[in-house]
Length: 531
Figure 1 (cartoon, rainbow, N blue to C red):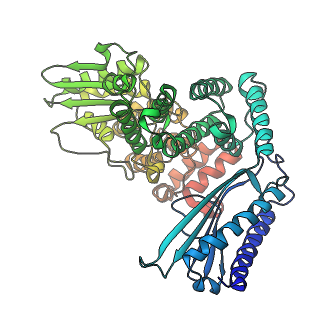
Figure 2 (cartoon, helix red, strand yellow):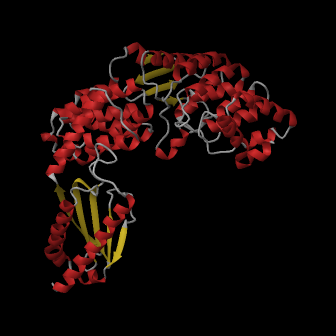
Figure 3 (tube, rainbow, N blue to C red):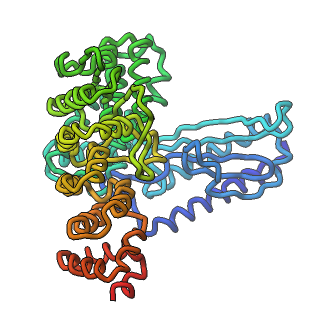
């Protein structure tokens, strides 16, 4: 291989790398290791460089969905390079020079204690058109690794074992989960990982920091999933230990208990089946067939000539099959659910509903058309069950507990507090249930639910503006960080009587609350409209 050609490709590669490093310093001015977080030594642990069609592309993140590079530079000389020459003469040189750079920046925020360097060469001259050759190199700074491990152990002791401090913010929570679930870094056993997670949950619950607790659960699922895919499932089944199987099952249970999405429930269920079938776990078999076993048989199963009900507290699913479409069938089904919830069944759950009745849903836009939604809508066809439905709603609705009937992250804004479908239906039926709606608003956290904004629209259309409805409409506006303007209310308060009623009701609110309410009605024009 021509030496000049070789040097040109290598020099161009590192010119590009210099630009990547330069950009990182621009984004993080004046930062040092651990300056932003007591447990973050650096940022980058991955770099992929792709050599293709006269271009060199740099990717700093190992995400499958990323197709656009962080940097692209032209290198026409690549078109003259053959695969064998690239492998023999260029790859070793790039690896060696990159290692030098990695250790040169050991006192910088630039790199983490480790990095995976991936080099990809796309050979146009290969018989198989555009064939990609991939080379991976793992590089580790052992001194930096030990330093981070020491700081992590200190952090865990102070925050979770001695309970002297709190996790600073969302970012630090992510970093913490990434670090403590890094087996290579911490060296924890699978058994200790489970014990530590449970201890952390206990501490977070007592601290009542729900936002950080939610972040912790989400990130724990994320990194346990990563361990499952990249480590556990790649092990030979004969070499898998009991502790590893236990962590695999624990991951599935954790996902079932705390994930927001129905897809996650499906994946966790598949993991439990895999643990039962491939790894012969009796524990997984019990969870799938009977749940945890903590609820008595009479609670989790009921059958008569009209219906069949069964529940699994691990999967957080209640199966209801109606054979006879009468009020008594649905009353028994409601009693079944209420009894479950009162005895500790997960408050975040879904209903799998089987019935010959017509598939109908509440006439509220954007509500997910799920089996759970359909079940509670069907009960509204029986007015004699409304009081029982109210009892169910009061039992079901709890802060930070949501129906698990949305399919995936794309439907995040459609998730609803458990009990929502019953509350919506009853509140739209009769003023008698206005106190229930007011109680419902108190259970909401304005950062965690949006879907009731569409209920509020329907509520305005149903009742208009009067002394009973208006306070609930305004309280509704303050119960969520909505992204819509309620034009139907703006239309109604064109009426002078309604406008006077609005102005009078606003006296009950702070100046900040007034602005939120008025913006919800008129948007940015609210100042001129209220005068």
